[in-house]
Image 1 (cartoon, one colour):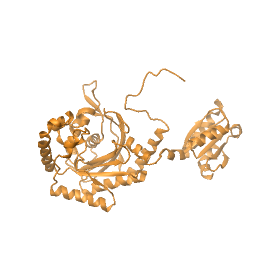
Image 2: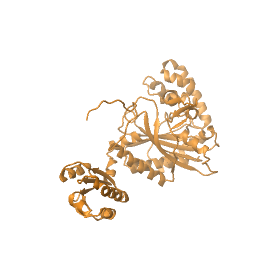
Image 3: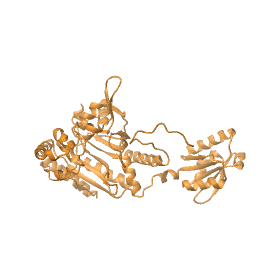
Image 4: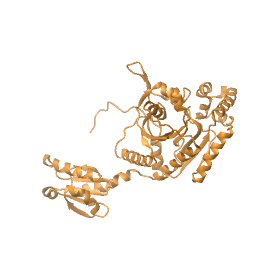
Amino acid sequence: MEFALKFQSPKGMDDLFSPEVDKWQVLESRTRTFFEAYGFREIRTPVLEATELFARSIGEASDIVHKEMYTFEDRGGRSLTLRPEMTAGVVRAVLEHSLLKQGEPLFVYYLGPMFRAERPQAGRKRQFHQFGVETLNTTSAVNDAELIIMIKNYLDWLGLQKYVVKLNHLGSEEDRKRFGADLGRYFTSVQSKLCKDCQFRLSQNVLRIFDCKNESCQPLIEKAPKTVLSAEAKSDFNKVSSLLREAQVSFELSPRLVRGLDYYTGLVFEVTSIGLGAQDAILAGGRYDSLVHDLGGPQIGANGFSIGVERLLLALEAAGVHLEEAVLKDTVYVAALVHGEETCSFYRAIAQSLVEAGKRAHFSFAKGSLSNHLGRANKLKVRYALIIGDDEWKCGEVSVKRMDTGVQKRMKPESLVKGFGEI
């Protein structure tokens, strides 16, 4: 059927539908199961937040605030922004609703869409999606190490094998001030050779220069001074590294890893997937011990990470992990060969029985032979096919066929819950 297309989705903001969305549903379900088994509970925050929340937490000099946020003024004259990340919104919600309890850690996870006005490419969209966790009221190196060990267990459990964990430590507040001063002097001496974005970063937050992807800046970045950690920061980093080695978590030290958000302090980390090309980071996070206080709360430690869903799905596909197959195991093909208004209540009863059996249904009302329907069921790779022909309709029954064995059995719709386990 041809028609004139009048509207399209905005560039970099994609529609999702079956079978692609099946992978998302499986990944979301497994992620919820994993995080909740580790004691995290879901938190949902608005897609829109006050612009100042992100400007204050992420940093005016970051590429996100400087160039990528979707910001507008509402009818009340308030400046609002589509969330470019979740941590700031989570901390705002935790403080607003007094979720912190004296001395007790708070473990939350989230999933949902984020928005950044950047050039769309594979695994990097203007509307993209993240899973993430935040732990608040946590300060020890043990907690940092446990978070990274959990990440390894999560990725291994999903079936991802070829990935690299990268670590760096930004040091204490004094370490960062001293490092920032050293970088400021160095990059000022080569300012004319920096790209325009890095010249802006130099005036706002010199650490952001390490985020630059411009080839002309890379040789300058390589020659930049390296941070010198205080004894306390070095001890903290060594403790994390030791705990990871004990847990057999492989990692690489990455001294130029600073993350693109100003609120990070201390340990920072990133996970890249081998084979994804230039945009290979699937997960990143670290410690942010000042953010809660900066947003009006108590001075407490916190850390967390976020996962790029689109990139994780690409990495899993490259690793041969086909999540949609899990959906097909619970999908029943319904060959509805009998049509007419009088059949509606019968098909409704079948659907309700499938609900109670925990199955998904692919109803096909296409006119065709039984062999055509079974061919479609085979193509979909479902485990079961339900056949409703004239004989079944007259008897008020369905024929259930196990596609991999060929075993077939007739039964009443109300017997389906038990019947699937019998064939």
